[in-house]
Length: 92
Image 1 (cartoon, rainbow, N blue to C red):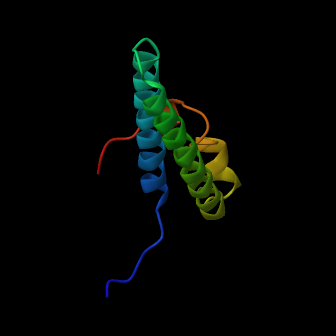
Image 2 (image 1 turned 180 degrees about the vertical axis):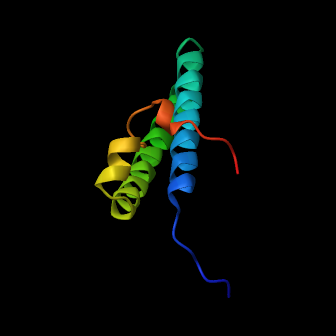
């Protein structure tokens, strides 16, 4: 069995950016479906997806804060809850 490893800072930055992209996509789908007939069940599913994504984001944020020190926080801030230049990363 492969040993699990902790999430690195760079991986947290990538995950945070990915979560922003997913949240944007959910919002786009929600906005599109609002104007369509009989879209209630789909909107409910999107709302549920958003809530589950928020729960995941909160758990990852806790792990991120356990990993970093004050200097790192000053540099990157709340990566899971604020978009900024420091959060931009490329796929590894």
